Length: 54
View (cartoon, rainbow, N blue to C red):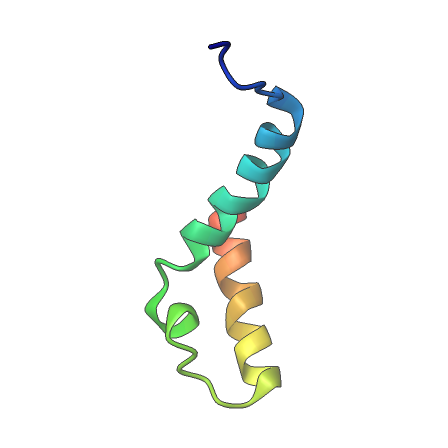
């Protein structure tokens, strides 16, 4: 039985998206949606993304 086909391009694209999302989930405020207002949540998400980027 031949091995199933494996295309690297979609895997790499998915991996490039999943890694930053998983890093953001390490921030408890973001993972648990501690901020109830959308604007506050977006602000915390932005701060966390900036700190991860630096």
